[in-house]
Amino acid sequence: MTRTVESAQVLPYPRELQAVGTESRPFEHLLDLADLPPGAMRRITRGELDVLVAHTARGIAATDDRCPHMSAPLSIGVLEDCVVGCPLHEGRFDLASGRPVRMPTTGGLDPEGRFHPVWTPSGSAPKVDPPGKKAEARQLTRVRLLRYYPVRIRDGSIEVALPQLPTG
Image (cartoon, rainbow, N blue to C red):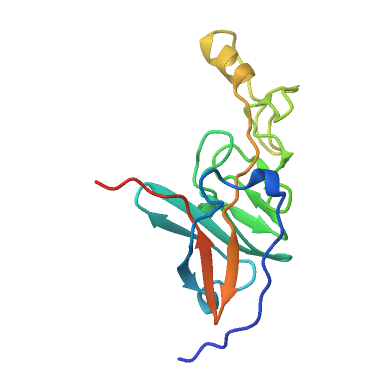
């Protein structure tokens, strides 16, 4: 079976959200463009680093494959346009801006430190948030901004600059 490689572009992201340690790193092949059709997401693991590579409606992005809320793998969530949905607490994150577009059902602090209460998805029984240490922890859990790895596309290859990984 022969796959055709279509052209794709890299999704621009806010430069202040570039992952630490990637500034002067070389690009390395993560996967072939033909293996990531539009609307698809893949997890690529290098050592202890799990990278989400997503082919959004606006281009290809690479970020940690961890929800910025409680570290669930985003790669098994849902991608709609440029927004990835977390499979654990239904938070939604914009891959173009790095920001949450819907806070997780557990509530908590947004990146600016504003509190959002626990919420219940439609069609579900109302969620009770009993007082105690768990409720206190939820109120102090901050949803972070996504962090990005620089991406380029060369000769049908998606290449990403990753930080130096520990050996040993």
